[in-house]
Image (cartoon, rainbow, N blue to C red; front, side):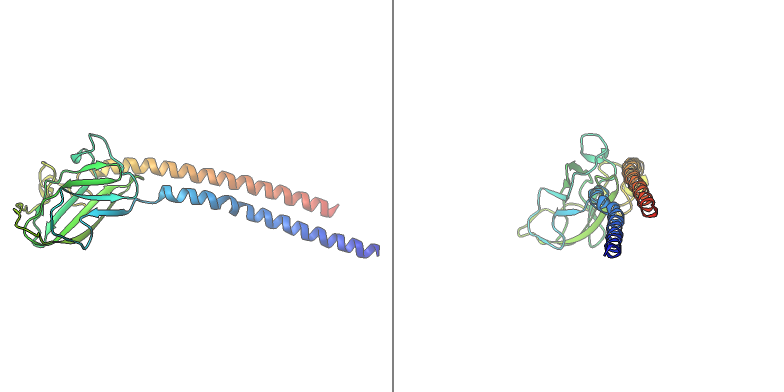
Length: 231
């Protein structure tokens, strides 16, 4: 009976040791899950929530402004949040013939960017836009809409080059279209991206430090269990 009890105790000890080892192995995962969940949103880029006009829609009346709204506040770079004091923001509206409309001046307020609206003759129009996401990265996209006014309206004059808010056209001043990055955006977005990258790196190092501590604790516990077993 004594041998059986000893064998049972040894088996129970082995099971408890396995349970402890399993818990030690799961501990890093349990620690990392909430941390990774908190890091994800900080690293994710902004995305389009709504626009005026909406993609694929048909306009019968001209709104006061065309606008883009994202899920979080945009990253402005100074000035009074209007015009091209905020590099990296652009919204170009063109017709099927490649004629551009509007003055190219942007106003940025929190999560929205807008520009005074202007259109030419009825037909299909293309909107190309770019904003600077809250994490410092420029994001851009494009969509089309239809313009069919319900009453007689005065058409605006188009231009062969994209407007740049009173500055020289893109092909004269060396600026690029929204898809390639608005004029002057390179320096500003690189600086803000570097700041965001530094913050993300510090988070990674912090998580790594926690893992090192957990791993060290696991090694100490395993060594102690082995000493007990040998004793």
